[in-house]
Length: 166
View 1 (tube, rainbow, N blue to C red):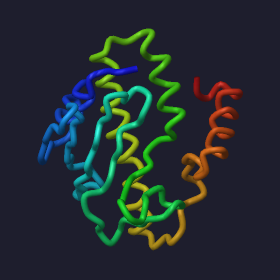
View 2: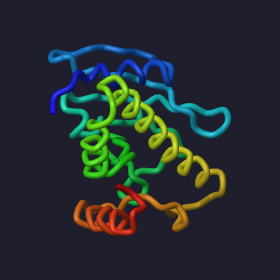
View 3: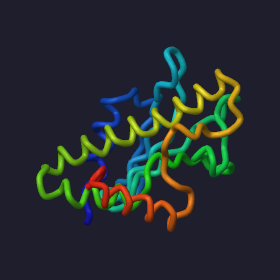
């Protein structure tokens, strides 16, 4: 499903300060947003919104690596690109396939923007909290998606069976 990526980019810019914005060929917006971490900290992140964003979750990557930001599978941030895994791609895809039946394109874009910001800020907040409390491992009480796609798919199916997600 092709939808204008600016349907997500514009609300993102309104939700968080857009430090720099540029459109590349094909109108794939690349934004650098300042996300909240803790009460006083912020972290710039790069967001790339694809032309098929209802089916392909936007790419989110930290623009810097402060000492409190951990990397690796257990921390849901890639070591090399600092790409932030803020949502399981299949959950994103299924969610927007269902929402498309009820929402306008503009509402879908707003929902996607809020989802990206909220999910990414939540993940970064876990990193910040672990740093403040000297934790070296991802806290067990903080539920997040499994690392391997096969395991995450099983997790999603289990949640759907329990009717915790649609």
